[in-house]
Image (cartoon, rainbow, N blue to C red; front, side, top):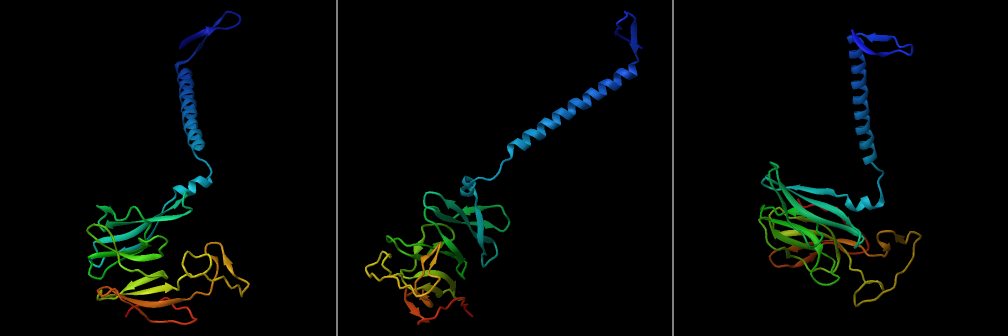
Length: 238
């Protein structure tokens, strides 16, 4: 038995040790509950709704390409650039074992990465060295070094594929932009002859077509495969 205090009449009353132990247990459980509840509230408070600024912190990984020898994976990491109002993409490669990651490009945005058939080089699309140049094909040694601009075309390259012997590249390219808003010497106005004449990303839609070309790595010569008023694309090398 344990003496607790006196009643209003002055008569002392007692609690058993078991009763005190039960009360202590209840107090400990209640304090533990408050502690856990405070942690839960703090964690809930840390969460928030997504805001427009969060978009510029989001990165996306794409265009994975396994090297011909199967030891590396080439891929791109894209992130929105608020100052330039466009996505910027960098190239990386990671060993298939996951032990090593190498950043390949830094200054200029690069996309459409690919391996050369001999496993020695990496190709990609990026803006040419000349001012206002459209995207060109660049080549760089997989072991490092500065990229080399391979093509010098006036059209807009939308895709390319290596020949299996590595001697040539099949290119899908849109005709050069010679409209009045293009930064070229030839000025031609837009001719609007359809209801769907403008897109949010592309702006005014013109009548330029997409054709197929073959680029010779050694001679740097570009041969035209298709021409005319029809679009060609989705070609493969046998």
